[in-house]
Length: 508
Image (cartoon, rainbow, N blue to C red):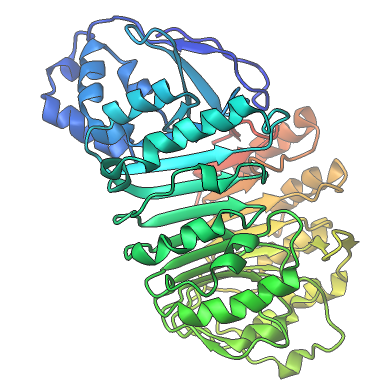
């Protein structure tokens, strides 16, 4: 295998990976029977990486991979030039043209590519992602015809429709006329649907189809789509529902739609309502979700009590505003099995209304954004009252984000004395001295007991790097590792994300 790489991960890569005609290397791996290699491939297929990478190993692996139809069940249909920054290009002997993939999905921008991908998939269940994004030429006849050809290759064939288990449909412009496209009569085995659209034009076509899809358990919808489908008989078997904004939409109407949809989902186990839609709200009637385990939403804390979820184990709450009508003492929250809590709030005192006896993971985000996307400063004294020593004794995983003062960070760490994994994400507006002060505090005399059980510490993440001078920061990191090696629980991992989008540096 030969490959070239670009330096900037955020630019679409023009590199091409060539699959060579090589023979297996001498060694134990060459003696593995095919059924064992297929088992390895099955485990590998759970990761979002192209099966062509398996075919790169040697000719034998390529032959086995091409005979393993389950590896080729993931396809992405799109029109025109591919500019996805995560695209990988493969040059395969005998294929005659470069193959594009995004993750494990083959990109099909032409009918011929789609036909070949379907052929490789054999009779396996299909995961198809259809993306018609906005383009400068999307109103041209050629674009329309190409889109029709691609959809016809899928939806006009009953044998293909019967194999679709996961379907993604992203339409970010409204020029495609649904009356000119084939809509399947049945998707009898469809289990997951992701439908993101700025326009409800396609809704009538799917309103008749979806009630026939009795196996749908996962729905990821934009608010315009939800509004179009709220009265369709399709909600009873839904286990997971993800809703997010798309385009210019009246979010007050979106909240009203949720008021009617959620009670129609008796099997719901996961509900995620993406920012910035306030739900539940003042007018939302009390709702009982007996099976709900995971909940992510944006609302005032006092409106959380409108949801009764006795089995809830994970809550991600983004409080849109600190309402003057909200009285902490009037809030009553009863989630006795809560194990994971993530909070972003200008006044988080209400979190002590929870029973923390089972809490294992805690995420606190201090820098707060309002509905107008303007920065709201939370009073430091409020958080000082939250971060009391030993406030969260059962927490094993802690994440603290955008805490602007070293003293407040140290107080936060003291509130989770038994945490084994700690993630520290800086505020964009913190100065370069912040990290140095924090790390020096972690091994200063008198702090030996702080985070004494933490074996994994991480600074920053893939999307928010640790913005300090690396040369001046690394000596303190090495000193921290050296000192902690003599503690009862030495560090097993100390990672720092220095550059956004780049893998972290490991110091242990």
